[in-house]
View (cartoon, rainbow, N blue to C red):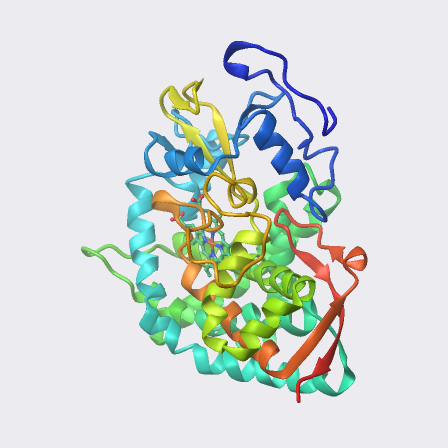
Amino acid sequence: MTLTDRPDDGDNGAVPGWYGVDPNKTDLKPNPHAHYKHLRQVQPVNLTPVGDWRLSNYVDIQKLFKHSHSGMRDMEGLIPGETREQTNASKFMLRMDPPDHGRLRSLVSKAFTPKSLNTLRPMVETVVAAELDSVSPRGTMDLVSDLALTVPAASMCAMLGVPFEDRHKLTDLVSLVTYRLAKQAYPHLQEQSEAAIIELAQYMLVLIEERRTTPTNDILGQLVMAEEAGDRLSNDELLQQSIGLLVAGLETTIGLIANGMVCFSRYPEEFEKLAADPTLALSAVEECLRFEPSVPITLRILWEDTEFGGVTIPANANVYALLIGANRDPLHFTEPDRFDIHRSEAKHCSFGGGIHFCLGSHLARMNAEIAFQQMARRFTAIEIDESSIQWAPSLFRIPGSIAARFQRRR
Ligand code: HEM
C-alpha cells in the first residue's frame, strides 16, 4: 500500500491494511511523521494485514493503558512469538503481568527514588562538562559519540556500580544485546547478540556476587539488598532486571538527547530561549520527548473484547500503541507539528502508561536536562545536515552518528 491508499467502506472501517506504515517496506526513521499522520487520518484504529491492531489517537492509547483489561502476555500467559519455555524464562518486569510485575517493580523502584537519582547529578554534570570542554576548540562534534552516548553511559555505570573505565565495553555489549529484541529485522547479528548476552550476564553476575558479600550504595547494591515482606530478588531475577534496565535505559536516552539536539538545530530560536533561561530545560526535555520520541511504539494484549473509537478489537489481539502518532494528535495538542519548549498544555505518550509507565523517566529527564543545559550554555548555531544522519540499526529511533558544527557562545 502507498501513502495515498484509503480504506474501503467495511465493517467499522477496519479494512486490513498498512496504510503507508508498513515497517517492512518503509524506512520510518528519517521522516516518520507524514506516514503516521496519514494512518491516523485514514484508519486511527488500524487492523494490519497480519492481524495485529495499531492505535494512533491519544484518547484510544490512554484507554488501552489505563482503562482496558490487558497485559504483556496473552490469555494463556504466553509472550507473543515465544514458546512456553521461553516465556517462563522471561523475568524482566516489562514482560510480566500482575502479580509478578508489581512485586518486581516495587523491589526495583526503591532504587529510582529522587534521592538516589540526585546523588548521580554532580557526577553526570562533571562528565558532560569534561566531554564538551574537549570538543569545544574543534567547532565540530559527533552529537552521538561526544554527547548523547556519554551521558547515559556514565549514569548507568554509576547506578549499577560498573567501573567507569568499562563504560565503552558496556555500551557495546548492550547495543548488541538489544538486537535480540528484533530477531527478524537483524538475523545476521543474532550470533553476535547471543554471545554478547552471555558476556554481559557473566560480567553482571560478578558485580552481583560482590554485593552479596560486601553491600554497596550503588543501585545494584540496593537491588541486591532490596527486600519487601521478606522477599528478595533471586540471582536470575537480578540479572534480568539489571540487564533489562541497561537495555531499557541506554539506547532510549541516547535517542532522547540526540533527537533533541536535532530539534534544537532545526529550531535555533528555541535553543536561544533555553540559553537565555536554563530553567526551561525540563519543559524543553518534555517537548523533545513529544516531538521526536526514541521509542515509537509499545504493545499490550487484550484480555477481553474492547471498543476503541467505535471499533471492537477482539480479546487476545496484539494492540500496538503508536506513541509517536499520538504525540502529534491534533485533538490533544494545539499545533502538534510546532516545536515549542514553552508547551505545557498536555502530557506526551513517550514513556507509555498505566502500570508499565517507564520506571526510568526521571533518570532520562535528568540526563537530558543536564546535556541540553550545558550545550545551550556553551554553544550556539548548531548546524546539522539532517540528510547525513546515520540511523543506528536499532528497534528504537536512534541516530548512530550526527556530524554537527557549532560556535562557542561569547
Ligand atoms: C528517553 C528515554 C526513555 C524512553 C523514551 C523510555 C520509554 C519507555 C517506554 C515506552 C516503556 C514502556 C511503557 C509501556 O508499555 O507502558 C518503558 C518502560 C520501562 N522503562 Fe523506559 N524509557 C526511557 C528511559 C529509561 C531509563 C533511563 C530506564 C532505567 C534505567 C528505563 C527503564 C524502564 C523500565 C524498567 C520499564 C518497564 C516498566 C514496567 O514494566 O513497569 N527507561 N520505557
